[in-house]
Length: 350
Image (cartoon, rainbow, N blue to C red; front, side):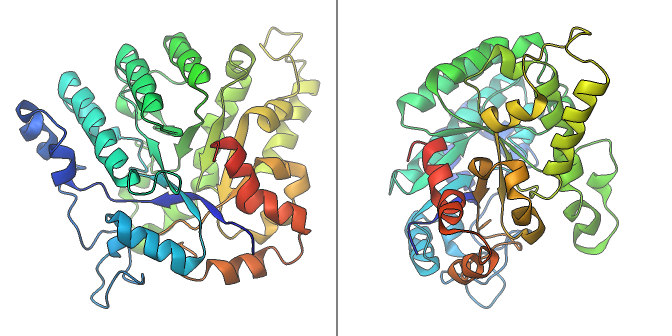
């Protein structure tokens, strides 16, 4: 097997590491927010199945220790991981006083940079932005780029944090700054507020676990149909952890309605078919999705990024090599190469 790149893995940024970068006058505010108290050991979404974990149910040590992470990657046959620090995109930080929130996100990113510094060519962090202050977000984009960052993340639903949706004109300068540094932006699936999923009554949040395609479809369609990619052709958006099988239908529906409803003639800012913006400007991650793989030519093989989702319950760790051999058995080698490494290497400049 050639090099493997996981396009969606996770880490736990410990409080002590954030506080080391955070001015002391913001410590109390940081520790008061719901996302705080990140401690080594058990986490709600992690199991104890890692080489660096134990039988007690604690999270694998590789979730917060970069040396243990590299050991687990070696065990799993994964050369590089694209690593998410917070699936919500830092939503809890927006509930703080704006000044404290900005400082907390910067410190959080700095702690994640420390983690990656152990092996920067193998540990690729997806960094947060202080979206509630566009000028500060632009400053952080450039700071991160100067420190060698390769990816950014925004909340899936900014409206849940009281922020404008992504087609609002207030984001135009931010999109331009992100284009300038050439960093892709991720939208990671998470339960949105106001749709009932935050109070999922089923054991193990069963409703939420099967809803990601529905949750991801709205921001995907909004970004395409509001002309964001027409105005910012260099912007790259990655849809994370929502699978693939739903995408062909959505693309077919977009193009079909584009023609039937005469969108371009009626003033919508689209120079091309919606599916063309998908293929030029967007990508999606997946772990195990046999149906989606069978439809890969309808999605675009160049837009697909395989992932381990380490160390979450959906993870293929420590059996990723076996999973790849089984999952991609019907795919030609050139497609396997693209989806398991080449596409990610191109997107993240690895």
